[in-house]
Length: 408
Image 1 (cartoon, rainbow, N blue to C red):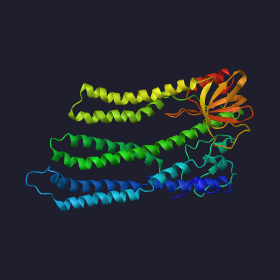
Image 2 (cartoon, rainbow, N blue to C red; image 1 turned 120 degrees about the vertical axis):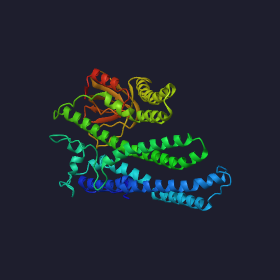
Image 3 (tube, rainbow, N blue to C red; image 1 turned 30 degrees about the vertical axis):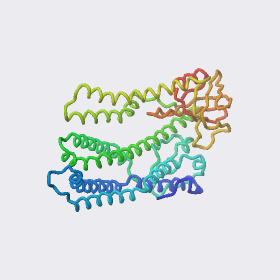
Image 4 (cartoon, rainbow, N blue to C red; image 1 turned 90 degrees about the vertical axis):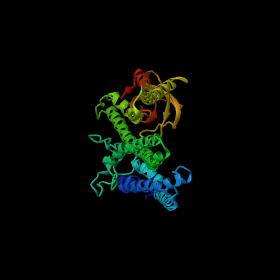
């Protein structure tokens, strides 16, 4: 596997670093999400089920669950146990580097989002595979006639992102099958019937559970990277608007799209419970429970937004914000240390944030997020930008407009 970006010295040009990052990201993606892993996981699941099934019947006889006079098949017990333990030992050895691969994939996917990297000079030539490195950074195209939108850094020789999307959709189905099999196994009239189904149900359930968690992490991490790129587009479009190079972006799209995305996991949970209970008939109580599984997470999600909004407004003058470290070279001479602080906006563009008193020209807001706090940039008169997050978005933009700042 490749090293982490921080372990690699910077080359002479931005293009050289882009090529190195693209290749290393491709290697990390193959290790983290290649088709070979899918085949290995399927083999592990099948062999574990076979081993459990071989060992369960004689084990049941040994604990007194067999019929009168039945003798346990000791050979089947030994072979089944050895097959299961051997398969699991091989599996944990095979996946020993998966955590490192996941961290490498995350790190290299954001390897271009560093101030020291973005400050490197242009190489002037495309990559061997025909990609223009300069077009992979919104920041480095901010002075062009048209701003690019990369929709996430692309690897070279890696895996297709659509494969991660399919996994995020398919693995929950395996999880649902596992849950259904466990419910059916526990609903059997005798121990023998349960012993037949449970050795298959438990491995399917556990495999689906952990595979779903990994798949959703990959998909969510990719979506977070796209959100950062969209924030870059809004940030540097706003910067271009202030310089007279561009027009303001259109307003934010319909909020129901973001709300619908948030509700996908909880809706899946509710449908899963109703589908499992439908086998024996759905009662009014069970419908209420199923709806509650959807409603309670929704209330918690939206309630958390309300609580954070109220917390940002209380606690002193102005609004509570989190100043962020910038991921581009300093655009001006003024900076604010990262950390929690409060921002106060006054008439004439006067602003106080993190102990700094200055005059601001504009407030640029990033893309709305499904769960995370929205990012903003305060543009000062000297050209400096202060990146921060604030949960009271509506109040922040209203106060900025009242303080005669341009709100973008």
